[in-house]
Image 1 (cartoon, rainbow over the protein chains, first blue to last red):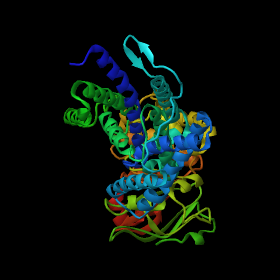
Image 2 (cartoon, each protein chain N blue to C red):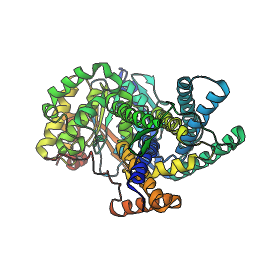
Image 3 (spheres, helix red, strand yellow):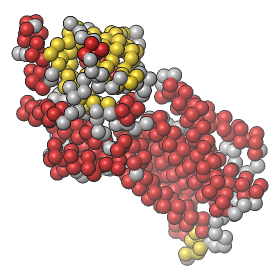
Image 4 (cartoon, rainbow over the protein chains, first blue to last red):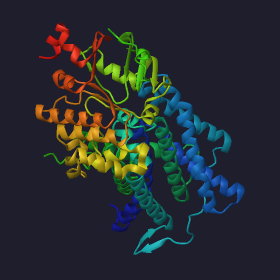
Length: 298
Length: 242
């Protein structure tokens, strides 16, 4: 039986990793809303974020902030390339969504292998953004990086909310998600919106990767677990809903952390998938599908 | 019966030459030509399944189509849907095509995507036409009544400053009084100089508004005539005026 301290510590750890899952889940939602595509290569953006940032730091010796500022657009470009090289040509040739989704899975494997051949299989990490710590509250230790993850996660959610509700491009992306034909008829360039969605989604993945790498190693193959857990987070939250994905990620992260403490590390994924099954059984459209649809019929 | 646009002297607002569209192996729209003059209100009549909606989709390139399109004499054949909107060709789809999970305000703001600097002025002019929308600004579009949804769909299209406004069955599913109100608004818009191409099941109402009529059957325009000429075509008059 875990002690109270272990219980609290696992919740703290779960919140940190859960926020990362949430960010990956939001990345899934952004692309899905703009295109109807589930981008199974979402996890590689997390991996690339960590790998590119670590490479810039270790090879060029540049300050962390510069590495971060360079990494995000570089990974965003990989998202643009994926849309231009894989998704758009397939769409133009009339490929089904299922075929395109499968192609994104193939892209994930391809990018992983290219990363393996380029960077090798050595796990990599870099120092936490703020050295020192951890902060001790009683016997519960909270690493400073968790505060970075929490702060950046909250800031990103706020910025995304502002982007989607207050900017012309953000509103246009939401319009595309609800009725692509109507959006086109109003002059919205849907193809360009998809490009923006892939870039934004990749940038979100990169930020998640940059934030999480100091707390654990990154390697060519870390994208898959992040991708799978981000996908589960998005489904739990009601696929397509950014806020739902974030909440789903937090729930999933905490649940996994508790499962590790209570049942052992081997039960981490069992707990995640069992939770997913239970959610889908009782809430087939996700836990938060009803939110934001409070129609005021009169 | 068809009168080529080139014989009319003036350059039409929109001219389609031999436009056709297929769904797989089925040719839903056979090569057909039509034109709309500046400031004209033209209606397309035809039975269900005749190809009216396909024609509208072909003209806006929502459905891939063959044939040539000219806007004020300029060849716009290769332009995609959103580029046609930039020229001022705006369509209100059958079923209204709203963004149901966005508020009335957001739908209107999105309507002004191409003219965002003029959003406030455009919105004021939309509220003059449809004051009820002002009362529903923060309500989700999907929760409006059918009539209000249609007002929003037309209002949103007006935000895009149309030169040619195309409407596919705007009175579908509306109570007669509301349908009359909506179609009356189209007459007002036409008076302001906006060209209108209208597909409408309520033919007697549409014929009261339109200056000219195309009759479509089996995927092809079979007749083009001025509205007052329809009475002299007994078969058409019997079919559409009663």
